[in-house]
Image (cartoon, rainbow, N blue to C red; front, side, top):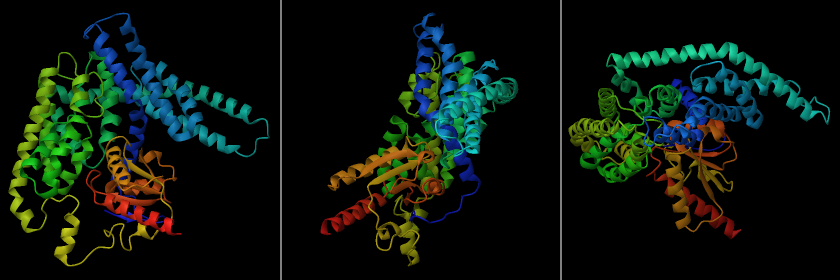
Length: 492
């Protein structure tokens, strides 16, 4: 864990950080519109001819929603991320070209054309920024974006739509090839480690969701929605820690199970794997088992299960897929539990001998004690910590994670309760996606693997990085620092 003050520089983190950043951008377009995907999935599940309550009149909404509504929402969100309201408008205009120019739902096209259109408008506006005579601003803005929007829509219709259609066909063909050759379970070899490295949003919303929604339009369901979202592998690992773990890891695992399995926040089990990386084998084994079961039973969901709660999974399960989906969750959890149990039991004596007793947040401190020296980098907020040395008033605290909805929301809730119990007032604690950091936060708290990207977005903020959003002792240190500052203010 690290704490840094404004001006602290850090490396970019290499290829992983770049992929995370790309995944964050993709998920930033999808995540705010998940409610629309769920609404479309429920209407599909109930009213299509093979649904629970078939109704031809109501089912007429299904096609327009998947062809127009969902891609345009994605494009508008992507455009806003790049260039605000004007970016959202031109992204929507241009995306109509790629939608009309294709015969398949244009989710990939929307994620490409939307942000690109907003970027081009941003560059166009910069050409005459500050040069327009007063009174002509609205005229220039409206006509420039209108003309550019028309050109981009035509370009998307004739140029981008055929390319994206061909690319989508290649991706879908690859998935179908894996399915027909019974090789789809091998996808877990890449998916499960990718999740642990916080690339889950790039994998799920950047790849599986666009192809999965297209498959739903064709066959009414898709098993791609379950490759990343299956809560079974994480459940098995947490169960293994509950029985065979040590220290805080064992004590906190049952609570993490509730958050992971029922709440759908998969990030909660990542630190348990990162503490003992060989456990990724358990995640891969469980993931492969779940995919294999779904392939065997030809099961699938009607829409993305987000968050990946068992409730969300069951709600979105196709009417003919309940047995296979439930078995995939149970068996994937069983396999990951068995593999993780063997690993934990085999390393138990060695971990105790080395002082690694399963304390997720205390492992670093125990290592320092064994070595007989401390680390200034891991020193924290107390003493000469950077945050404590910063004399600024802290009123706005932001928890930042990849999507800004899962693990950061949990951490914000934990710290908010601690601040309330401490009797501190006038301090706001919110959660945001890293992509939405605007530099106004006094203090930013994020996972240590995401710190480099967060610092780029808000360089003047104080930063605290943690290895576990739920159980970090850093929260108590933050509260102590806030109390100290409050006392100083009162004594002046």
